[in-house]
Length: 170
Image 1 (cartoon, rainbow, N blue to C red):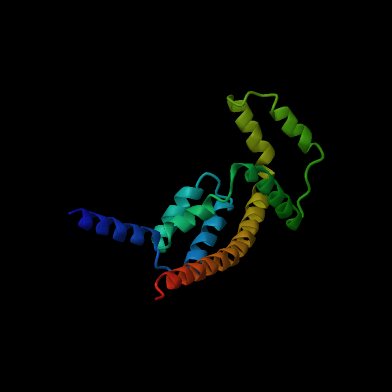
Image 2 (cartoon, rainbow, N blue to C red):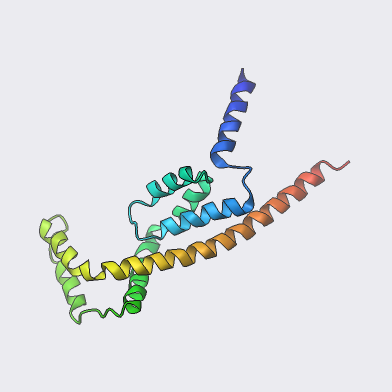
């Protein structure tokens, strides 16, 4: 009975993790996760990653690992930088008093409706630069992630195969 349960769990985990996937498919799953993790869809990264992984029958763990490469301390600098790039590409110039407008916002309570309404007004002109910059940034990061992950997976499988072969030599 225990062997039946272990076998069932092992088959379930193999299916869930797609252990038998090719290195290219696993690297693509990771790269998709990186794309979603750095995309402009803040707050929806995990839900989108799981949904797309199931829809495309990709390695869920690889997708989620990619999604979670966007760590909290990367969020601010990444999105500010990509928004600036998007703004420059679109020819958008920051208003000269933008810094002052942001400073005035933080004199308001974060828990008040006035803060959030004012924040929306101040940031509204940056919506399209934000979308463009972070989408292009996530595409570039996903392309780099694919090649790095592919190289890593291939080298790990070669090492694993060598070790397995040496263990079974007479």
